[in-house]
Amino acid sequence: MTSSFQPTRWTLVVHSRGEDTSAKVALSELCEAYYKPVIAFLKREGRSEDMARDLAHGFFEKLLAGGALEKAEKSRGRFRSYLLGALKHYLADQRDHAMAAKRGGGVELIPWNTPSNTSAPGLQHADEQSVPPDLAFDRQWAITVLDDTLHDLESEMRSEGKLDLFKLIKPWLTGDADTTSQASVAAQLGMSADSVKTAVHRLRKRFRTLMKQRIADTVDDSAQAEEELTHLKMALR
Image (cartoon, rainbow, N blue to C red; front, side, top):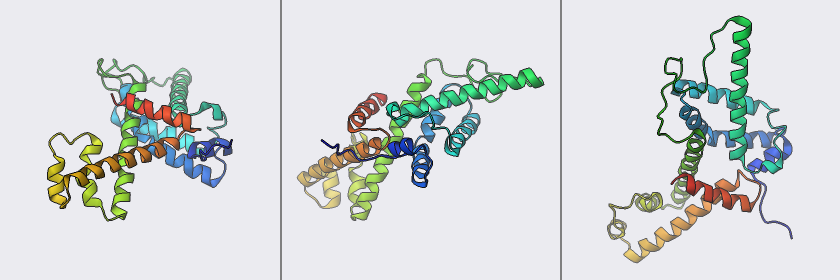
C-alpha cells in the first residue's frame, strides 16, 4: 500500500542533498524556524546574547552554504534531532579551531562551555537551577511551533473575514481564557453561547491540524509526526 504521507521540506533536503533550488529554499525555511531554539541552546550553555547570536549566524551560514548535509541520511528522521547534533558538532569545531589558534599563535583561548567562568568575555553566569541546554532547545522549539501555528490560523481567519472572532477566541487556544467567559465573547460578537462553544471547538481542531502539518514538514513519515507532537507537549510541561 502506498503511503499518503507527502514529501516534506526535510525529506526534500535530504534526498537532494540541498543541491537544487527548491531544496535550498526548504532548508532556508527550516533554519529560519529553528533560529530561536538554537539561540536558547547557546544562551543556556552560558553564552551572552551577543555571542549566542554570532555563533547562531555562523552556524546557519555554514549549514546553508552547502556540503553540510552529506552525512544527513534519511534514517536520521527528525530535522530537530539532526540540527541539534549539527550544532554541537559546529561548536566542537569552533573549540578545536580556538585551541589550534592558541597553540600556534599565542592567542588567548576563550572558553565555550564553562558558564561558571564569569570573567570570560562573552559568557555570563548560568543559573544552576535552569534546565539543560538540550531541554531549553526543545522547549523553545515547541514555543516556536505554537507561535507559528497561531500565525497560520490567524492568517486563515483573516482571509475568511473572521479575524474578530479569532482574536476573541484565541485565549482558548493559548490557555489564557481563565478571566474570560464564552458568554461575554458571545455578547460581543452577537452570537449565541452555543455558537461560540462550537467555534472554539472547531478552531481547536483546526489549530491541531495546522500544528501537525508544521511538524510533519520536519520529519520523514506520519508516525514520526505523531511522536514529535507528543514530544512537543512534553517539552512544554
